Image 1: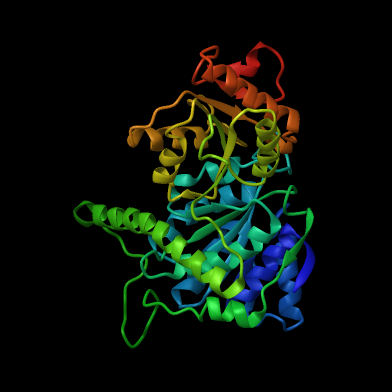
Image 2 (image 1 turned 180 degrees about the vertical axis):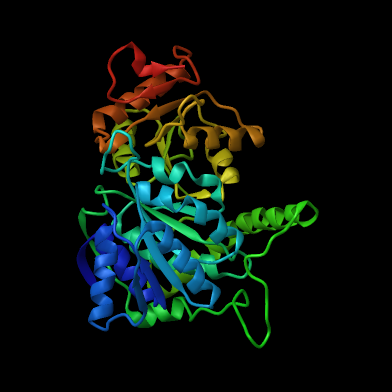
Length: 397
């Protein structure tokens, strides 16, 4: 069924189709209308679940962990400072191997106070043990709500998944989306079953301590199973295509990268305008491509290295900054993944969209122009360029 939905409404439809048994909710802009829509579904009996309106984001994730520990499929959502307030619980959820799905509406962090969308919130928490995936549009957001459960609950993974949806650019923007029929969703995602739960007949310990002798094994297994998610994502997306009719490309989405001289790497909703500009440049004779990262955890290292191995220059466009570091979190991740696999290409880091600022077509054209100069030996590799800042501080080493 085709509907005209905001990104938040679309995601709520995906959650409804996943049939969670417990939802723990605390509203925060721009996530609020997700949990509002789900509350309405529960009230109207189109979604049968226990809906908990808790007193804080910290409690929202704590309640989700408790519900998951009883063997229930659970959902929660947050944004920005709310995600940071949850930070203590994030490692408990991932270390406890609870396959919770959480939607994060990407939003700038304070201070200055700002309700608009950049990606500093989720990117600051990459190492907290959650799978992280970034939607480009409302259709993908809806579909990821379903696919995230299939990935999280696979026994080879058994880890929580954070689905990131750009604040306002997607959460409050309306698009036409295809909502799967309930029968197709049920065929794709069966009821949740797990051995990682309280069982009075077969008692197990959940939330235990592990000292130096054993702790390293748990961290190793966590890392191993995060890496296993790559194969699981591919299998899940193949099943989703077979049951719901839409196909997704795995951890990355490469656009016109096969013969590209210049490639701009990005994630989330910025990929659309980047592809449009790449098409313009192609028409003018410049071989430009766009590589959209869908999953940033696990890191798609092999795919990044393969896509970028033959290019003349690489740009990474991201909506965050690691203060005092060598650029943003995505830039560092891309360069490290490529270097580990013997791929080192001249690269620039473009920081844009901070505090919800628009990334314009002209700015993306300027990014490609900088890459073209770099490829011709006329630029300085490794620069961090802040889009929209015109003074001499706009391009930093």
